[in-house]
Structures are given as structure tokens and as C-alpha cells.
Image (cartoon, rainbow, N blue to C red; front, side, top):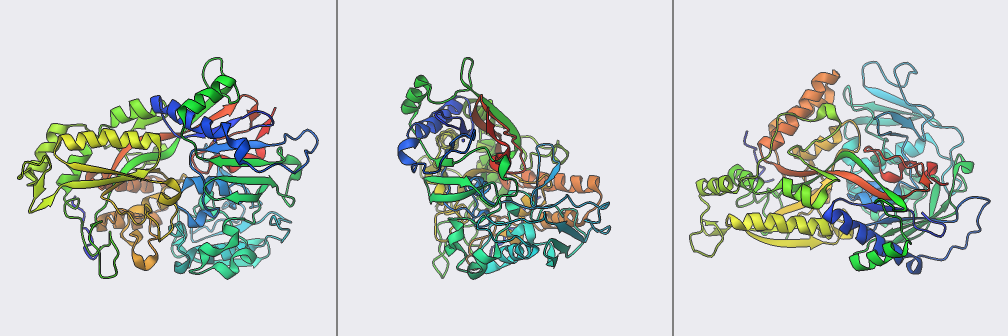
Length: 580
């Protein structure tokens, strides 16, 4: 099936206890090194603790992430680093455990047909809020805040990055102060997507009412969130550190176990990390170590995206990668298939990710009932070269790079600054160059790359030919994840580059399958529709899936309560964390 391309278009009291890692084995330990280095330097970078200790409560919990958050409003960011930090202070109505069981948070209970929360025809869901909820500034939480959150996200000028989660909503009504009804445009099997999980955090109307348009990124609450979570932000240095203290208005204050939380981002020195490990200041997860490594495979995978538009050609307004101009050669399915054949997934997984990665040929990798058994991925440089020959791309001027009609097959391949990703780029570059494709590697700081800032060099703007990063569905229902590749999700200047279809791929058949799945109430039929969508993306070579990635964290042996779920951020149950 050939796609139609739009041509218009990581605690301590005195020790370090938890470190957030991102994959690998040889690189797995390299990433450990990156994290431990920054951890060793954290004391000098972090503000002094002026809060007295309370009883037996440990004084401080320190978290280290390899990427630093830059904004604390998940609705305005594409980066998990921001969602992770924000999730400590902000909460949705409910979330999902690792077993896919919905857990009520701000909601008094999970809506069901039996309790009257779910309409029999699937057209609405009614949520009841817990009584006496308050924001961290003491303002009461009401159903009107849920209504406002919907209004904020669905306002185009806001440029919310997860607006797609809310597209099927017809209206959101506050029935009374504690009751909110969500009505859908059609019977909706994915009723649990809005206001659930990390993408469903509720915002306070009183903090954002004056920033609910094009000025949304100027809201002070983006940096100093007012939330309902167990801890509130008291200091935030974007790109560096976030400091939290107990939320004085949290609904269960006796459950809080830390006087202070410091979340630090960044770090890149393996030698300094070894010194930290040797001194015993950090816990480590090998035999005889003082900590453990926790690995959890979820729905995330590393992939390469094609730019179906030309990143070098400007339109009349000076914008690049716009739908007016198709890519000079990546719109050719044979070329895309050749590039996919030249990606050595097995080597990348074994050398850079093991045991925290598995090669994959699927775009949708979880939950199991949605995972296609129909796809495969080969590494075959000879076949890749043959496909390029057949497509007319040959080295006519003997400069080592294939060309056709005066166009050189030269690629700019971008990703975020990260040791594993740079090594992955090198492996892929070597293979591409061996079959006559020129490759320029580009690395963008993660604080910019995933920022969602319409003026920055972001994944949305996609100012390159190829780009690589990890994402996945954050809900057991994959609807919003698969929405990514629908035609309406293409980022354009007119929507502030806010769409999720960064590739600018458009296939009416994919859209039709998605539309059917959006209204199919039979679970088995719906599962098969998502499998078909996945298979279509693979068949069209619309994306190159590489490795299914695990969440990997290093945790001290005396820190308990951590319960990783694929369907929310690692900090989702931080209220249950404690030091024994």
C-alpha cells in the first residue's frame, strides 16, 4: 500500500537512593555513569534545605534524571522529562497500574456502568470528585477546574501538545461542584483517555484563566505549578533542578514521607561517576552493590521518523518542512524500505540497550492484545542497495553518494543529546554510507528538542530528513497514540506546529481505520483495527521501529513503594515511596 503524501502537505537523607536511567548494557553502564556524575555534584547545585525535619520523616529525597525539565505543564510539552517532574505536583482524575487497572486519584471512584458513571451507549462518562479537595495554594478544587482544563487544552491558540486526547469530546459540564460529565461526539470506547494518566492532569482555572490563549506559555504556573499532588514546587531552575516540599493542603498529609524532594537533571562524565561508585556515595545494582536496578518493559520504543516534506526548502513565509513541498526522495517507498533494511536493530539492541531493549518491527508494542504478529524486520544491505538502484539512485559523479536528477542522496539525521542515541546514530550512519547515502549527524539539546516551543529546533518543526527518539502509548487504550499518524495531526505553521504527526505522513486508509476504531465498541474487533493500523505503517515504511525500550531506574535497597507502570510517569505514586 502506497501512502498518499499531502503535497500541500532517577533518595537520600545522607545517601543517594534513586537514579533514573535510560537504556542499555555497554551503554547501560555508560548511562549509569552519566547519572551518577551529576548526582555526585548535586549538593553544590541544590538549594539549602531550610525546612525542619518532621518526626521520623527522612529529610530529603533526591531524584536524578538524564534530562532536565524545562516546563512543568505536561499539556505544553512533548518531553517525558517535563511530565515526570510535573507529575509530582499535578494529578489527573485517575491513572492506571502496571496491570492496566484504573486507580482513582482525584476521582472518588472509577466510573462504571454499575455505578452510573458510564452511559450504556458509550456517549458519556460522569466523574465524581473526592470531597474537600484543595489546590496547593488552599483554593478549593471543583468540577469547574476540570471543565477549564478541557477548555484550555482544546483552544487552538494554546497549542496544547496533547489536544488530540480530547478531540472526541463534544462538551464537558460541571453538574455540581463535585460532578463533571464528559459527553462525546459519538459512542466512544476510549472514554478513559481524557483526564486520565499523565496527559490528563487537571489545571486550576484561577491560575490559568488569564493565560488560556496564545499567551499560554507565559503563565507563571507553568514554572510554579499549583497542584493537588503530595508535594508542591518551591523552586525551579529550568534545565537544572526542581525542589519540592510537602503540599500543606494534600488530602492525606500523614502519608507523606519526605520533607523535601530535589529532582536534578543532566550529567555526562563516566570517570567522575566511577569515583562516585567507588566511594559508595551512590547505590549500584550489581552483585554486592548497595542498590538494585529495576527494569520494566512498557509501551515505549525508539524509532526513526522520516520527514515526508522538504526540510531545506522554504515556503513564502520562510518556513521549512511544510506540506507545500514533498521531500525529494523520502516520499519514495522504495527508498524508505532501503533505509529500513540498512538499520541493524539486533546490533543496536544487543550492544546499546541490552538488557533494557528488544528489537522490534512494530510501532505499537503494548498492551499484548494490540501487538501485531504479522511484521518482521530484516537487516540486508545488499537488498537495500538493489532497491536504491531500481529506484534510479546511483552514484553518477563518483563522489560516493547516490544521486538522481541532480539531487544528492544526502541526509541530515537528528536526535537529542544522549550517549546511547549518538552511538545509535553512528551505527546507522556507517550502514547508510556503505550503500551510498551521505549522512550528516545532528544532535539537539533535549531541553530544546522536546520542548514543544514553536520557535525552537524541535521534533515538531523537524528541520532534518530523519529524526530519532522514544515514545509510546501512555494509556492501555492506544487510540491517542495511533492518532499520531492521522492526516489532521500534521504540524503546520497555522497550528503553531502543535500536531503530533511530525513525519507529515498522510494515508486516507489509515485515517479510515482509525475512524472505525474510534467508534468500535466490540473489544476484539477494535483490537484488530489497531493491528491493521500498525501493519499499514510498517507496510508503508512510514516509520522505522528499532528497539522496544524498558524503563530502567537504579534504586537504593532501603527505598520502597516504587511501582512502575507503563501507563503513567515513574513518579505517579510518589506518595507511597518511603525509606526503611
